[in-house]
Length: 150
Image (cartoon, rainbow, N blue to C red; front, top):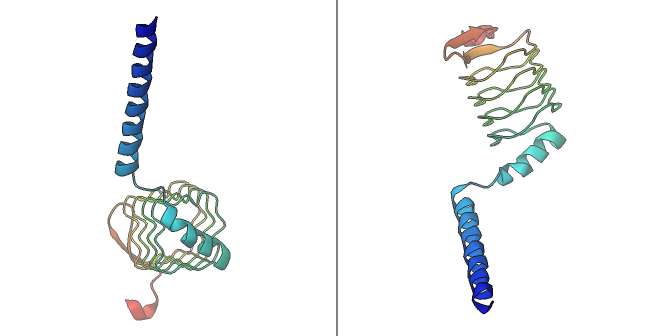
């Protein structure tokens, strides 16, 4: 009986050690979950402006971002599914691999933005400014540019 208890204690210690090692590996190898971006997301949602923000990987699904200023923002891999970006300023923004499915992009300014590999399927868009913009297919677009920039 004593040997069985001792064997069980050793197994428990080994199990706990294994769990500790696994947790340590996850802690070291997996980056923090966008904690640094929370302040910038809060600023965007409250002040409606976040120039040069790093919102890469941010979850802004269904967010009301009408008329916001995201000039030069990093929105790589951001989830903007269903977001309302009508009349937003996304000049020179990095939207590579962003999800803009079902987003409202009416009158949004994407001048100089990079939309390479972004998903814009089923999005509402009209009156877009795509001046010197890289489209999802990687091609350069020059539509609705002001006369002075042609």
